[in-house]
Amino acid sequence: MALGSFGSFLGQVGRVLPGYVEGYRNAVSDNWNDMKNYNEVHQGQRENLLNDMLVPYDFRREVAQSGDAELRHYVNALNTDLHRRMFPGNAAMADAFSGFAPHAAALNYGNQLRQLMLIERMLLSGRLMPFGQGGNMPLGMGGNTPTPSSIGY
Image (cartoon, rainbow, N blue to C red; front, side, top):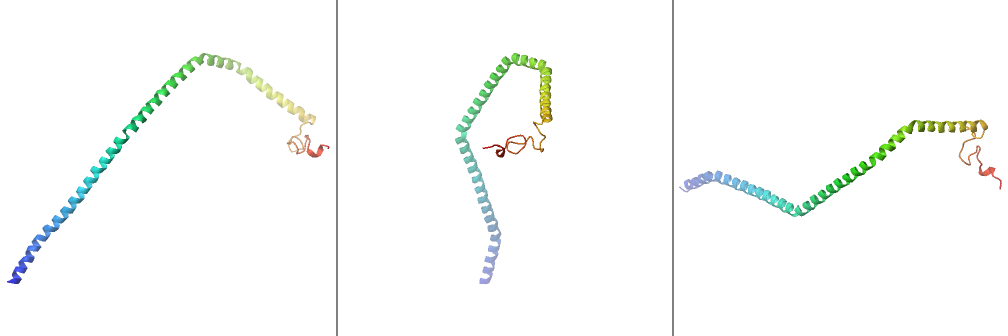
């Protein structure tokens, strides 16, 4: 009889054990879900607090950016007015220069031609020698320029 009641005790434990294990797992899962929800709510509260603390700085930044935009608008208006006032003179100057352009090109060509003729005369007279032939060298390296050794003391 003692063995019979011990057997029924084991039978009762066997029927209770699966429910206990399932309840334990549910309790652990509930605890983790509670912790997750708590962390999410706490994170949201910290973000709200930070945003509330930054509102004055955000406001000042927006005011400064608005002032910068207003200043840029004012400077653009001044530049537009300045260019509007300068336009007639700039247009007249451009007309004068464009009308004078052919003469300026001819003068420039004439200057280049005069320089080439001067170089040719200097080459022919021997006052200027082609580079590498003893002439047209930097000072002190020979050619037609005085060197320290050619200057008497």
